[in-house]
Image (tube, rainbow, N blue to C red; front, side, top):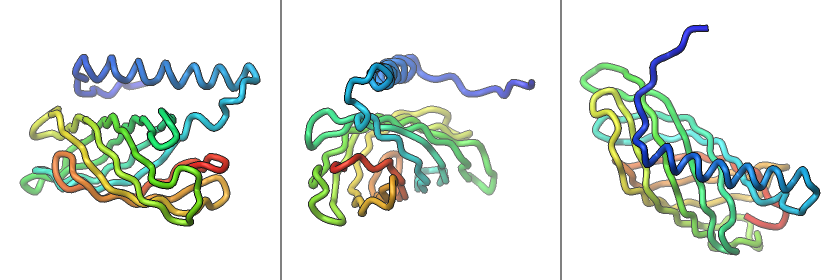
Length: 172
């Protein structure tokens, strides 16, 4: 199997990723032991356009966990392609987010939320750089086990995203 070279991750991102993943592992372990934490981890899939200095299209995965009734903590890892000076290059990002949910108990079909956090963006021209992230979104009604959401915000440039999250019973 041929190994593909990847850019080095800054040490702080490595540590944050390990810390968040170990918390998710505890939730999975609790589920297996019969403790009722099945609705704690909320995975998501997403597609985003980031209008940075080198515009990029990303497809990513992430997860969030409730910190309180209204607050979710999450991590997103995404990769794709960026364009600069007529050249296409590999691109990616890692985002650590805090999401404030206005309607946590799904009393309305559609509900707004705000999120913010820190991230790191990679593209072939500028390599890794840190960014401050802010976004406004709206989550829709659950369709089966999935819940759609749409976001607009900033983080290295304008961001537009479409998100599908696992619907949690009776919660957003």
